[in-house]
Length: 327
Image 1: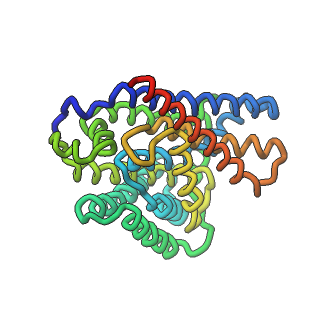
Image 2: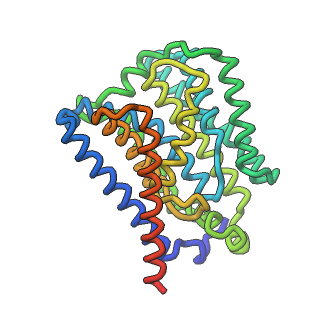
């Protein structure tokens, strides 16, 4: 895979991505101020750790989804990967730090395997991403049901306690894990693979003519996404301390919402993992704000959808304004 001048993002694209990130961070800050005014205890270490614990599974799911979306793809297998890893954690608990590390390896390996199947079907067999990942999602959910046919089981105590705890009584462990993923992405996007990922999302034919192995990049986009889904299932298991064969279903649609809310273009080539993670954090914080306001949970989806529409429309208007200004 050769690195060529064309594949670097244009200044207008970089500006659009930056604006999207700024918008979602600003929205999060506004919501957090509202939350603190409603719940003054939200500023203590325990409440912050709880917020991180609730956010991390969706944030990781959105991070994986963003990688696929950047390559102009969609990945529905997220729900299946999270469900399988969750039931495996609950049915086959491995205690202690060594067991936690082994469980992490198993979850990531499951995600990588599913991602490899997705990548092979989409990149090399030329099957539409929606059809291929829908099929693997159904297969994964079937396997999850075979492992655990009803909610139950128990995640290893070391995982459920230590990974939802605070380091030195202050720093949320889940926050450190999420921060590590974001840092890895910031490093990866500067590599040939990261640059090529944006290139094939922006213009696949031009990327191919520039010497980029489009098939290979698309294949590994699904593999890396699957690995992050496995990590999302791992962290969800730590949070819930139990298993469910449908554990991943609530994350699927919300992951797309988080990606869009973060300003990542669903047509590929623009956006990133950090903004998508912030989109997920905003959606989860909005749930907290609504709950603190006494709003019924039945209205949560309506408010989330409304915020998503406003943010996406506003981001689109800023993008159009920036493009006109650059001409």
